[in-house]
Length: 340
Image (cartoon, one colour):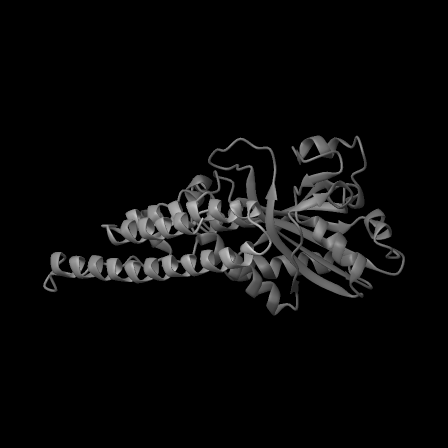
């Protein structure tokens, strides 16, 4: 066994010294020190030795391993130095060549729009609250007054993970979770990504962003809602912006409305941008339904609330006069550099 170990050591030293590059050196390391290497196989043969011979042979094997490892480390350093010197001799840098222009990015139009909305509502004392994108059916539907078999579930075109878990179709579940856990009064907006099974076109996407707002307090009225949203519209689109509210239906608010703003392109005269009407639909809103408050253990006889929701991409499209939603997600430098 000692003779075999001596022969293995000599073969290893020879192969390592003959290694011309790092790949060859690694082959030698695997051959002798790998899990299936010759030295490992020799260790396994120790079971055939007597109890007196095993510690002596084991010590010799360890000494051989240390010698091989030391030689491999030294050879590796030498080979790395040779490769470095070769590169330094062969590679040249022409310091007279012009430098490459570094492309500087810009904030995405959706990021700019979100910052603007957060600035406006932050100035009115609203807190920004976020929540999970993968949501329970209870928070996405039931707690929002949309029970099982409700037609609104079909209208939402929901992505179901299973019967109880969905990709949220709106950020309203964040409002429910906040009402359940936070003390009243409450004033918040909840921006975030939502998902609906829509075909991709100039105005639709299966993944987009919403910003929803909520106030819960005593004596909150529809007049408070209208005043808040009018101020928001004037801050966002200009001081001369007018608003109007049209009756609508949402399961989680009663009464409900959709809000239009006067076209900031033609100032209400009618143009291509507003399709000749002078008005642009911007968001949905309403007084929070008493059933929703009860689901959150809030007494609707003591507290009232209003809520609203607006699409972030819609704001970006309107504010920056972009006519195709798909431009927001194509990462075209020619498009994005306009927003520097």
